[in-house]
Image (cartoon, rainbow, N blue to C red; front, side):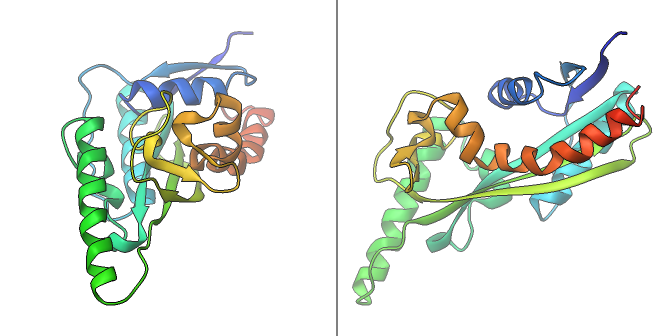
Length: 208
């Protein structure tokens, strides 16, 4: 019995690697979305953008599609960069630099008012699974609370991983091994919420 194709609605190589690892035990053939396909992320929330991407990629490919929209919400920046996390600057290094600069300014402003700096943040991931017609069949969200470091730490991961510290482990995402990040990270938590329903769809033959 051949594996059912599942297209990951992303062109981000880091996300593709993480999903391939998370889906390794499933009878699915994980594929990247077609090259050159761009879906405009016009949603005001992570969930809305995940829906848009899953629907568009499923209709374009005629396959089941799993979309993720995720990002970093920093308390002292009013939730920014939020849904604009990937568009905050042109490169990962530039995004991190902008984040640290804006957080330093916000911290200075808090200190000037007699308040302690606030470096709280959360990584959020919304997942949406669409069938080949483009209808969204499953939606979940995962969240990981943490703090923003004053400088990058670690060589792994991608995006904002080097500055996102998970206090209970004392490590940034970029310092964690894949198993640890998969367990405590926002994408891993979202996938844990999705997994039972995905297994039920497979058992019912819906993804066949």
